[in-house]
Amino acid sequence: MAKKDKKISVAFDQEQLESAIDNEIARENKIKVRQKLKEINKTLGKTKLFNFAKGKAWPILLPFFIVMILLVIIPILSIVVYSLVQPSGDLKMFEVSLEKFIRLFKNGNIMMSMGLTIAYAFIASLFCIILGYPIALIMSEMRSKILAKNMWLLITMPMWISMLLKVLGLRSLFLIMAPSALGTQIAIIIGMTYMFIPFAITPIYDALDSRRRDIEEAAMDLGCSKYKTFWGITFRSSMPGVITAITLVLLQAATSLIVVQYMGNGKINLITSIIESYFFKGSDFGFGAAISVVLAALVFLLMMVSKFFTNKFEKKGAKSWKDSSDQLTLL
Image (cartoon, rainbow, N blue to C red):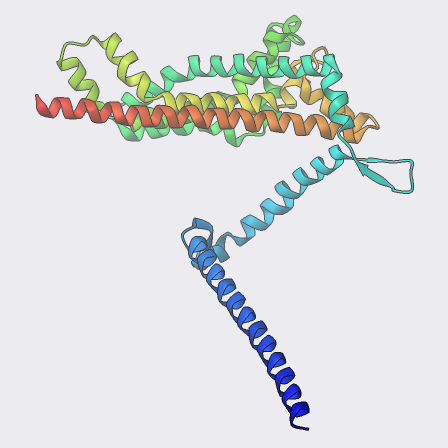
């Protein structure tokens, strides 16, 4: 009887030991999870988004985020879905496939049209810089800031006018003065330049107006000519604004449909016209979505390249100005 009780006691002790081990493991896991959550909260606490959500500004900006989600994010996601999903003949109604993108890259006419679109937009952006830079420089050199602001207001005023009205006005001018020019590459480039030059002047003026003029004065005092001072200091310090201007004009010109439609006069089809034909005139909505996704990816790539060069010029410029200031201090 005593041996039997001893066996039961040993078995009971073994069960208690296993239960205690399980409880200890569970407790240590809970401690690890809590520590992990604390680390995540600490990391999130350093982010701007987390601090913004904890602040008092998010209720005011909540309608903006709702509009952005409904009118920007959801349409973009739907375009991506349409470009990847296509009907299947199997039991599955739809399947994910890259077939539309493969068709796109194999279509030489569409790829050439996309290349021409970027080329026309780049030429238009260069014309905007050539025409807009002197205007921005004159505005930044005005002694009367009130006059400069009024001039800036006149330059940005066309942004408030409907793009369709501006293009129709330019088309009417072409019909009066040079009707044969409509439907040519020159008409499209002039139309892009006319439409988007205010977007080039604004960032250039901002860069020129905020530049350090004491560096220019020091260079001229040390014997530099106005020509060298301009190209070595003024233009170099305004490069972030110039790159931003090129990017703004390039992106808007490359995705503009109205300019191509009315200034091209139906004779020139760029990538935006092709996308419109697949979306509204054709039956292959998914292929048009694939073209849109590729164009959006190309635009995003151009933005990243622009940001890289802008940051590079800003850091390099800041370092060179610091070195110049140190040398002047030593003198």
